[in-house]
Image (cartoon, rainbow, N blue to C red; front, side, top):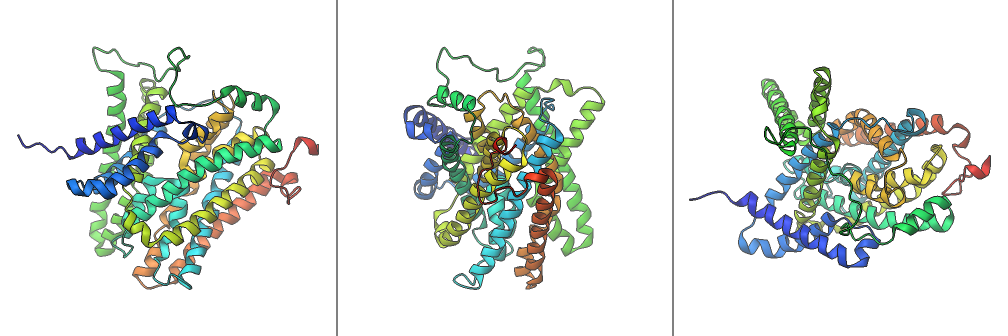
Length: 475
């Protein structure tokens, strides 16, 4: 019988690569020392495969882009459905300052990307697409899923190969997050940014193979909330996540139908809304979560199970995103990619320690690490770096970051909705739209500065020439 095996074939290829990368990390100290995620290694293995071998077997990489798009939304749903962790550092001391740290990188990356793009367009790359620089915050701070989704929307506007360039920025961010994060940890050890107790924990942790040994104390991955003869707990959780995604699809389908009455302008807006589907997915999830709480059925979901679903989605998404990169397209833009990525990396590396050491009242270095990882390689990278100095998540840093991400989501909606302005400046030949995008980014930067001063007060610019401010020594 003639069945469609495409999805199974590509999932099998992705799975085989992840198994190979797991073996590599368990045996080679280089990958352990730099905390390189297995999904990242698998992605680079498949980058070669899909560019040079897969075409000989007529394997189309477009399906990988579809994986990235859908897995992003599924990971959002699984994370947002989680029950709130009550253990946190406080709104004023941990959550809100963390949101300021996140926004600082959004704003800086937007401004940097746009200004460098403007400079390149007026010098060595006159034909560079005006929205090119926005791929820095999309690929670094938001991640491969968002970068791919929005980049895909720019292809009809004239940015050919935007998806591959977007995924390349995301891959660069993962590399910078892993290697830069480990370098930052070593610098923190040398310069005394980490307390003696934390240093002891790091020394005891040793080499991380990525696989727990046979007699290790294994953490609980998830707890059952159903009777197995009725429905398996994992089945229930997957069903909840997919049902929410189906509702999100229905919402956007309805919006598309309503916008069609406006005409061509409405359909263009609808197309752009599908590109930022993750925003509507997140909104739908939060509404469903509140309804579940109201009717008192939210207890049926388990954080551990939802974390596993999110982890599966993220691992597959990262591997797919790197494997889907077209090296031919990247070869056309390698210089602006390197320039803009390098500027973003240097900015994050120096601004986050400077801001964090002055803004937070506790766990300064842990908060710096999670912000650096999340601002370059997305949240999983930030959590991986945090585990080095806080292996059991004993501090409230991870919980504060999750709360802060919720705050940032609402603050960043205007920025996300304006993400197509530089693209419109090219399509409609109206450079003023590009200027609007720059002004909006500067507005976020101004907000960050005001919020930073409001939070830090007396320590705002203490010893401004030092990348790290030792608060205890200044009392």
